[in-house]
Length: 147
Image 1 (cartoon, one colour):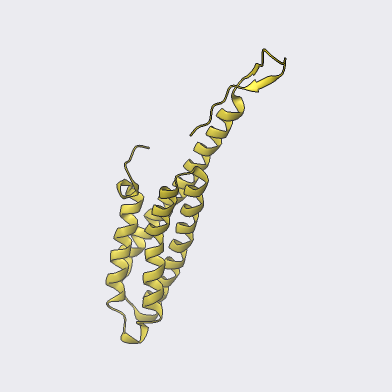
Image 2 (image 1 turned 180 degrees about the horizontal axis):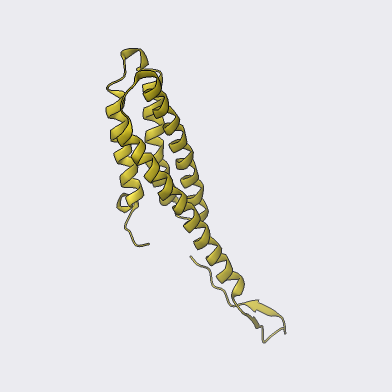
């Protein structure tokens, strides 16, 4: 995967589009929901691209996977809240729901791919051949620090 930063990722861009859609929905909610459901909707929506960015910013496969899972959790939270908005207030949330479905697939795939990349890296490390140390007759790894 070749990109300069998290803003180049399609999954992050789609998550930002979901934030915009969520804010549009929040603007249609009654004033009584300003500090209730609307606030929860905004926070869970914002958390999704934020977690994607943080995982990518940290850089390790384990952290990318961890923060992708957090984003997936926030996505499930938002999906529940969108259901409530539609159920309680009868608002049309189809655009947001479509983005939720796409993001769910993308984040799930990203987690699996990250796990495969990480396990591939670990397999590569474990597969490095051992070379005898000519001075001691013992083996030393031919690995060099990946840093």
